Length: 237
Image 1 (cartoon, rainbow, N blue to C red):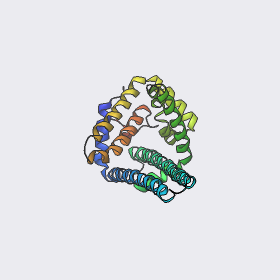
Image 2 (spheres, helix red, strand yellow; image 1 turned 180 degrees about the vertical axis):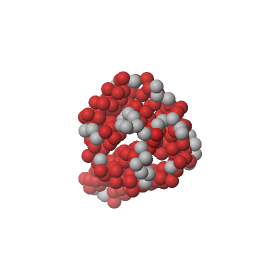
Image 3 (cartoon, rainbow, N blue to C red; image 1 turned 45 degrees about the vertical axis):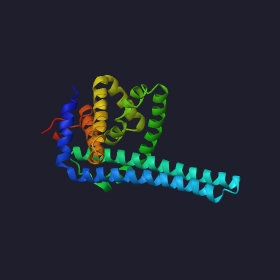
Image 4 (cartoon, helix red, strand yellow; image 1 turned 90 degrees about the vertical axis):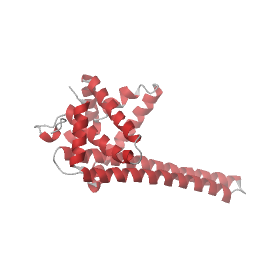
């Protein structure tokens, strides 16, 4: 049976024993997100209102300027979403290898791992976006029966070398074989995110490493490494 307490303890111990790489990722994530969001807002507001002011004598030019700025903003936003996905999935890939004893988490390793799986990441982005929309249309409750069952899809493609559809199928069937354990895992992860977000400054910096390592430790609880390894255990040493 899945134990969130054991997984939390194993997560804390792993982060303590491998603090350097995870600390770098947490700090880079926190400040990178802040700079990008504020930078995007500045580009949008300055461009929009500046364009309106410069072309205020012509309604046609003013409209073109606004559309141009909005278009640039949309492109920035799409790049932002892709960057987030690359960091998240690349970090998961690196953390899985670290937990399996195949290397350490490094900043460069996260991005090189993401680039190696860029096709899968983009495809998963479309799938998750579609499922999220479906879940929202089902009054948000639908998210729990669309997105949650497939949350380990990417790790399955990396760990077992499965194609996207095969990984989704395996994740789906595994979820419905043990739905209670998967829901406990998901709710615990949401709890980690909520608690850490309430801690000023430090909390947001350690939120990403804590969530990623917890997610990978949980994955190993549901999908043990073939051949077995002490590195995959969810119980603290």
